[in-house]
Structures are given as structure tokens and as C-alpha cells.
Length: 242
Image 1: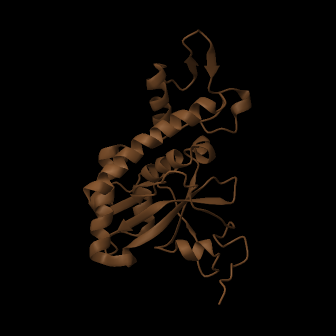
Image 2 (image 1 turned 45 degrees about the vertical axis):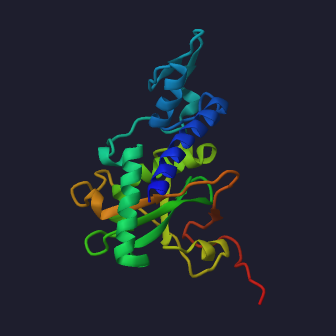
């Protein structure tokens, strides 16, 4: 248990470092989630603003221009609940909640979670969500943790997802169905979740839901799948030799 928690905290730090490495190579008009940008700027001692960043040598880089009209503004309309900010304390707590719920309710209480840039057909595996099925629906469990899940996915896949923070889609699949997804089994259909402006704060307590974040080991490319707008496999089923 404590080893897993320690791994999560170190993975969190590594994700931030990974973000910094990608951030230095991304173009000036690339959008990075505010909390990620703050991490980058704190290292370089550059204050974060929504309009411009002043470089140490006086060179200003604009974060928004006429050419950036297709890039979402780096301002959230509704702040997420503080207990779902992407910080180590919340990461460890939601993992503990996930394990406790799964230990009591079994596999029926969990679903696999995928995050997608709506302009592509690539669905990235981001982790697993757990919920108290007697009081919380799957839609509520995801909506309550939306910011948490979306930001984790952006840190996990900086190059592919971070520019679309705030507009990413979250889809779910049956729990522990990664193998069936990898083989494009047609009976596995992803379900698109809906983002709630109120994050279901009044309806769902944090203790009733959990999230096990996907973590990459060194050299791991990450699990992804190609899906249609209906959440079905784009490619034919892979047949296993008998």
C-alpha cells in the first residue's frame, strides 16, 4: 500500500518534470493547462498570465492572437472543487478510495476510463474509476472527478492532449476490459461521459468515488485504441490462434 502511494507521488513529480521537458519544445501558441503552465513558469521564474509571458531577456510571447482562435482559452468558467485539484494529497486519497470501494464491491464497482481529443479517433487509457454503486451513478463518479481525470491525462500524454485541456472528452468502458479492447472485440462499446458544470459536488462525496491513475513504467508507450464516434472499434477484431 505505502509502496503504491510512494510510486504515485514520485510519478506525479515525474509527470510534472515530463511536462516541463515537453513544454520547452512546444510552440508559443500551444495551450497548456494552467496548473501545468504554473509548474513550468515557477521553474523559469516567469509569472503566468492569460495574455502574455515576459521572457527574462525582454522577449514577449503572446499566448493568444488571431491565429489562436481555435485554441481554447486557458481559463476555466467554473473552478473545480478543491478536493479534486491534481495534487499529491488528492491523488493518494482517491487511490485509497478506489481500493476500498473495489475491495468491498468487487469488479462491478469499477470502469475503465479513456480520454480523447475530439479532433482525433485515438482514445488514451487514463485509469480506472470506482464508485459506491448504491448511491453514485457512473456519470456522477466521472463528473465529480472530471478535472482530476482530465489533468492526469494531460500530464500523462502532454504532446497529444495538453493543448486541448478543457475540451477533452472522457469515455468509459467495462472494468478490466483492456484485453478485449486491445483485440477490438466488438461487444466492448465505450460510453461518452458528460461534463457537469457543478461537478456534482452537492450530490457526491469524495469518499464515495475513487480513481486509480494510469502510470507508465520506463519506456512504456501507453495504451490507446482507435474508436468510432459510437465508441466501437474502428479496426477488425484480432483473432487469436487456436
